[in-house]
Image (cartoon, rainbow, N blue to C red):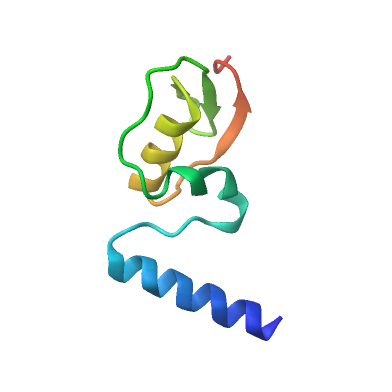
Length: 80
């Protein structure tokens, strides 16, 4: 447990130094987009807890990262 905590702290510090936002443990689905700053135009809507429909998971993750993860994924599909 202590080793995992130390690893998480060092990883977060490294990503902060590199200018990339760290991916929170409950946002692992965004880890694939952490290094990329461009998204495809494939439409596969997702809804954030901020009640905004995003055109795909990549766009949701980039917006979430830019806003320091103030919102999370609510569900796949358009917001109701």
